[in-house]
Length: 496
Image (cartoon, rainbow, N blue to C red):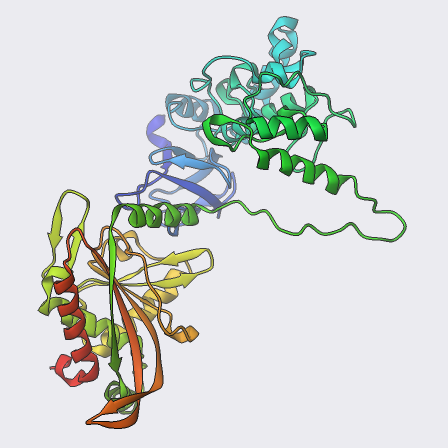
């Protein structure tokens, strides 16, 4: 029967992908699915991709809920024929129990879960003691290593935030997995406060003795002065300790909850909004921090007069109604041509191995809602301006819709970051690893220049090259910028 059951697994998009966040399902339990249909959106570190069905069938189970993170290869759902029994579905999922799982939202599972609840209710009182003991949060926090406890990703994350040891939680999910509900019920039963302000049955939650809670001296003293139990605080300090900021956050929450709202006056609004950092922003932060720490950046700057370039651009766009060539397209083409002339800059470095490229694969920085992505114009040195222009627009559009393929933004041999459209005259950019250099492009503006001993006005653009000094020497960077300036000031030389 298992041959009729098809697994929906977390795919691997790109070499760097290890897990993905479930964004939204396009189908519901019981829906008919055809091969090629969209099933679920998965957010990776850079994009949102859609998992499509490789087979036809009925969606019988969803094992990954929106907001959860699952590793590559994890079982996300199950497709099967309409006449496949629930027992066969259960057995199939059980055989995949090594992968992250969730409860089957089907009648059969509801019955199984109800049976589990009956068994728990009939169990000796000692079994439930850790969850309902009088010592409250202090007992929930006690215990040894809980990494082996079978728990959902959300439950494990919340357990760390509450300071709860999962050994003390009874799981009622499938295969006795600890779920988010199990954890929250245990916290409420112990008198704790749920994240978001929800409290237990008592209006004044009682916490256990916090003398054994790891905390900095300043945090402990402040908590004592404010009447805050350290069990109420999240742990964000070094070495797993409650820090001053953790105590201040609890104090701010209590002050907000205690503000009077009667008499027609509205509660004061918070001075800030708390928003969880996205997977994309985490990846950007980690990569740029690593780049700044490991790659010794050095910068060279040059100005280029682009009046001739603007004239050629106008001629191209006027001659071809379909052409919408931008100044940035000229820069991409000029960089590609310069990289062919100075191949020592057309390089990747992973810390151990150098990769020199024959063709120029230009990454173009594109701002999107939650960060920055760098789609790649491959073989830009072999393409004309109109082709580059069309490709950049297509890549930028799909980047903003989170519909790029991994190979369209991972890699590249050089990067261009242009803030000129915002009126920025000059800036320094951080290298996008494993690339060896990045060009920061400022706005083209009219400036006073000296030509043949005479003062004149020209449209000038400032360009700054950031290079990894481990692999690119100053003379090489200077040569590249000189060649680039020549192509920009005499654009006909790169169009031949």
